[in-house]
Every structure is written in structure tokens, then in C-alpha cells.
Length: 191
Image (cartoon, rainbow, N blue to C red):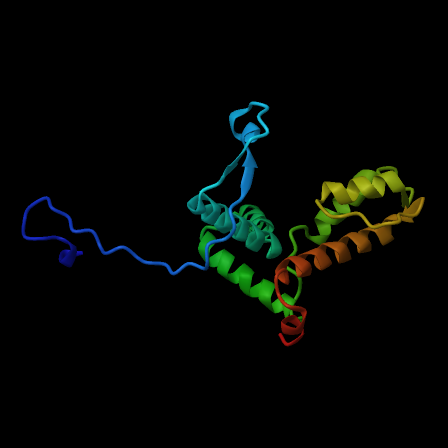
């Protein structure tokens, strides 16, 4: 920090600008003026190269996050931290990520969000009288309640024990897919 300050008081010397080599200029993007001004003019304008570069960077960033399911992974980690109520959340996240990588490697258990007791409570809430089965609509709602994609097709009736096992397997499969998002299949098989 000292080498950025000159001998004169209250004078700050800014570091030299970082030069980024950019790829060749992309073709201009034409946009209808009516989209910008709210009018109904069919006249098109050109978006400046700088804005195109910004749009391109934003698009690449969004694609990167979506392909690797980063927002979903962060939501999963945050939910686990909040559920654990840990005194040291950073250490908890480190341990959780280690457990996730061990699970992804096929060695450890799945550190899923809902434990067996949670799944049992959800299934029981859809079969309070203890019939031992639930309907198609109840199965779909049970999956949606847990934030899981329901299977297709769903039989007209399904035993609660079977539903419980299906929920557990689906939750583990979804976690594995989340942890493996963005990994090349060839690379994943070598883990």
C-alpha cells in the first residue's frame, strides 16, 4: 500500500490499468427501437461493442452458473447450515462439502437435506389413518412438498413403504446429480 502513495500528502497514485486482450469484435446486434423507447418504431439501432461485450459476459456467467447448478448448490448448503444451527458454520460447510465429495465418489453416505424421520413424517401426513397406501395426487404432493421431481408415471395407488423408499432414493439421486453438475461424464467416471 505504501508504494501507491507519493510524497505529497493526500495524493493517491492509482495502479496502472489492467489490459485485457479481447477476442475479435463480434457482429453488431440489431435491436428494434420500440423495445428500448416503448414506442412502435420499426427502426433498428446498433448496440455498441462495449455493451455487446457486457451482454456476452453476463450471458457466459449465467450459462456457467446454470450448467453447474451453482445457485441450487448454494441453497442446499444454506439449508443444511440453517438446519444444523452450528456454532461454527464455516467448519460445518467444510465438513459438509467433504461429505458431499465422498458421497459423489461412491464411498460415503448421502448428506441429504431430509433425514429418514422427516420423510416418514411427510409420508404419514398423507396417510394419517394408516391405510398403508396413498393416491397419485398425494404422491405428487409429497414430492412437491420436499422439492423433489415426482416420478412419471405414478400408479393409482402406492404403498407408503414404497413411497418412503422412492423418496429416499430420489433425494439421493438428485443430490448426486447436483454434485455432479457440469462435470464431463468421462471425468466423472474417473473420480
